[in-house]
Image (spheres, rainbow, N blue to C red):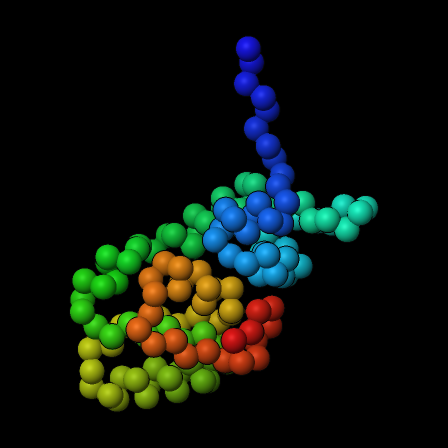
Length: 134
């Protein structure tokens, strides 16, 4: 018996489960063009599975929890879209003189991905960012 053809598209609910994100987050990702999808005539979103897999691959391309924790440094994640404030955070945290591993992201989506990769000890987030805010 031949195998059924591989599914090319999925629902927002299925995409959220595959990515480990909320339904609302995935909906915004489609609206912002971070995932390739569209709305059907009935208003339901369909998301290309290859787009989900590409997004997951990009999200995982930096290592995992064990690599970041190996240093014993305080893990700080800053989600801030303003480049000037990013530099201010970098300067301020460097002045603490503590073993700190600073990760900087410029969007709420990237922040969620980083939290999923390596949970920070401290999260600092902007309350107003495009797409998904703090």
